[in-house]
View 1: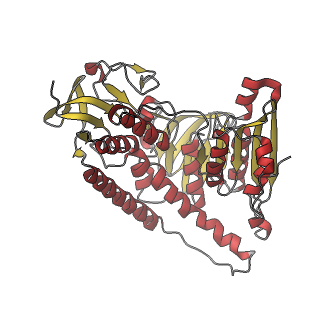
View 2: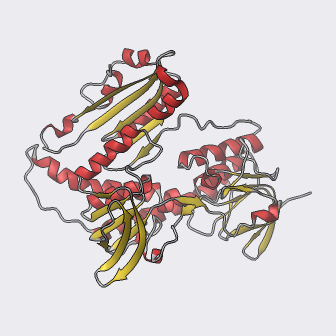
View 3: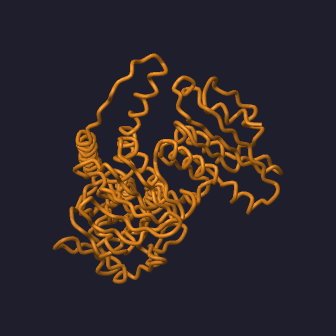
Length: 447
């Protein structure tokens, strides 16, 4: 049977963009459907605009830190509208750039919502098109917990478009999204209260990362309500009244309530059942090569809910295209994936947490850690600390995990990830000469 396209991609986020361009480079006839701006969550309302806001929020500390180095004290002012306008201007620029990349690659862009009619047929707007292979790359979306008054809350989608800077904000959720936005708003002068249902943030991270980041956030002025839950949000003349339960149940009055309690695959309206594509726990069910329960349909990225990171979606998309259109069969490993939390202070990690390593290897695990004041803060008077940690399996001397909290943690851990994936040992680190004076040298001098 002749099809309209060799490949039809649903969703022009990071994974969809990477796979469509790679497949087209092999000569495939490719179309991609997107009913929003091109770029997906990462570019439009995720990591890129968020990191720009992180940069903007950190200048407040520089003004204070400079005084200890001889600079005169100043009274800075912050313009929320200028930052938001600059961020959204950059987002629109990147949207146009990604469109131009698709056009240059020969990928047809269809600005419509796509849904399945059958395993080879898709409805896009008022058209019906067919494709030999179809790739689902629709990403995820924020999920709100259904409580009274939740309609008064915003999510990470809307925070980039707030017309006014909140004076008081509540953040519900202790994951990386809630932690990062709490730091951003605190950095620009908003009074932030973070509500978490457990006693610590960043569940799933090494405990030394979560505890040191939370300790640093408290020092920077963020208020925590641990072991506390939200029962109701009520609109009152003073703003939003947040009714709580648990250990710290005193109600809060805030201007803005950010719901950062999780994300879920963005599958609504795709009509997956028409194509025989099954789901598992709300995500598209796939095999190790990202093939769905329908042989010609694949899925990548956040919609399969494996490891929800932009570089993973990109790697999965390229591996799919190489395998199916480039005759270069390959898959990607989900082991030892580095990641960072752009909080204040910043965290970076790769490999196994101490708890996971001990569960897998028992008493053969030894941890090396150090906590110290970074040299930068010798004159600032700020109570800042850096934490570095190695998790080592003593029978092989292999480093199973590297964890860090402090300035540039993400940049440093990226390099450490190469070592961990190559199977570096503690002896390899010990033989490595450090760059002095630097924070990163502590990782090769731990004993």
